[in-house]
Amino acid sequence: MRFRDSAAVVLIGWLLMAPSIDCARDGLQRQTPLSEWENVDSFNSRESCENYREVVIAAEKSDSDNVVERYSYSICVQADDPRLKGE
Image (cartoon, rainbow, N blue to C red; front, side, top):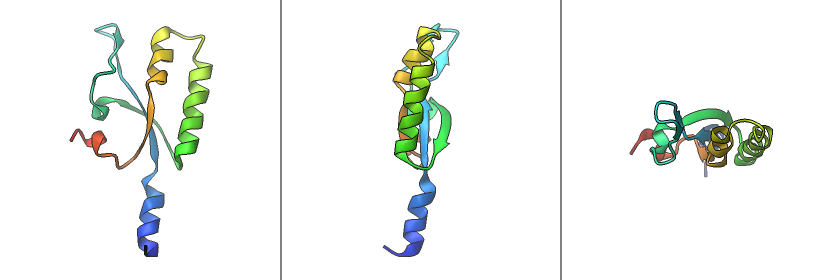
């Protein structure tokens, strides 16, 4: 691997994606494609993304069930994941 290739890998990053909440339908929409999920935040590593996800779930336990359930289904994905483009 050349240096230029390794630099590209570092720049990819990780995203915390959470299913959207459709208020009109009153509930969590887990079946929607990943491209329609909300980008909650971005991270330099999968580990930092997963750690943040765990913190959010713990902090939101006293909030509504939709919030807790929503972040329970959230996932960390690489920023270049093809599912984000809806393909």
